Length: 164
Image (cartoon, rainbow, N blue to C red; front, top):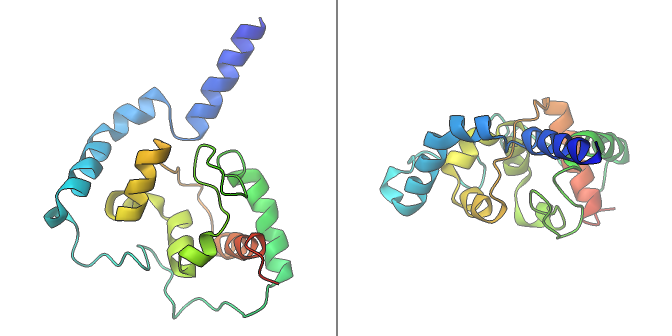
């Protein structure tokens, strides 16, 4: 009985993180296209901005203060606990996905918020995301985050990176 429960739990976790066999079969052509894009630069979209990503967030429509917004960070921490913590550690350690430590120093706010709200096109177009996919082997699932939730998570990431 324990073996059955462990098997069911493992299957549910893999499915929730985007790794079910049916999900993989549906993504087979997308994964193939990603591999082709990473080996043939001429197939990349000329209008993709790898510093901003793809989505609604731009440097013009995001305001990030010099100091931490503790209210937003607290809300982001709650969201992270529900939607992100099963795949991401707050350290540099890779779990299913990469660790979050230092991400706000490596990436612009608009890139992070575009990726967490709109991962599919960025997985297909962004060379850095494609390189990370080769390490993690699992595509980030779309968590259907709102703009406010994305902003809250970003502020929590800043807190995690030591912004006061």
